[in-house]
Length: 423
Image 1: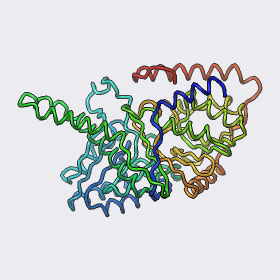
Image 2: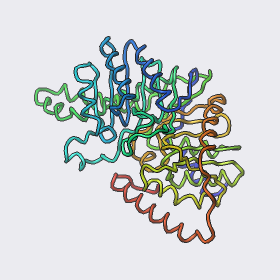
Image 3: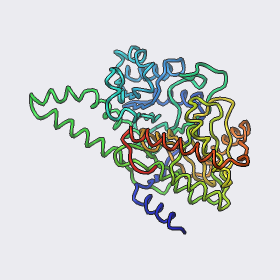
Image 4: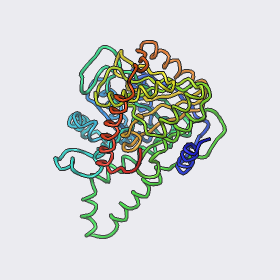
């Protein structure tokens, strides 16, 4: 093993490892067409509390059915808490507020952008990108599907073909961890909107300030919540990426799985611009004979992100990585299968925003049946995708120049966001 590999192993050894918990039931769901009816059913069955976090909460018919289920739950006495991102849901927030007003649903906005000066505040590039729902700590949903119709895109309007995306229906011990994570984010958003009110109350006595500090401590502890380890199937780990103690947890999980791979690595993600450790792990896996396939977006929603990924194609091809571009519709899935028993579904892209800035959540599942189900969906997507040809002769210089420019722009962006160091 080279010195570079040893350095990489020592680096990842310092980060929190995935903690697998048994006794869970999991089911793969494709798109909102499969997710939303199940979510509405779970919300309808809730008797105590419902917690929901999402980047986009649109006001189209599909999302409104979920909103109505939330209102109905609150109407029968269930404590319903919803947190949405201030940027992702900015366009639909007025309609959402009006819809939920007086219903008992407690709505909070993570980093709202309702004032012009909010754009200038530190941390505004760090968004809530999780897509989570938990009911009574018994049922949960984790994945990449926003609350928006599969055929509806905020920037490009309506289409005939649904975007490709996935979630997991989860029941068992890990559902409590999902619920605790949403509660922590909701509390963080609530503190952000009422912080000035809390400090005004300090003049009337120290108790409100002490309460605010206590909530902050709960938030910190919830980010590292674990439950007792069980050996019963299905083994799964709930991973979050935050700016507290879980900064590189999702990235570490990916890199470790890729380094252990013996047969195959299938990865689908719309935004792909990994850091050095991730790229090195993929190249080394392909060189040792592992079949590595990447399914990336061919129908671009953000052209700059797509061009950034394409600057890496030639380098990956030269190491034996196979690349496909999904063109039937927009690709929004963030999933991977390694060998025959490791799979992940979640909200995290493989780019600087997801790996270093945004709040993300992924579920990692060690189960052959689930991995087989996800592989089947991956194969169906690859079958209708376009294989990307290898590099043409003389690509080296132009490829290096393009990669150098993208890397420089990415580093500038990260420094603006307050991230320093090598990515």
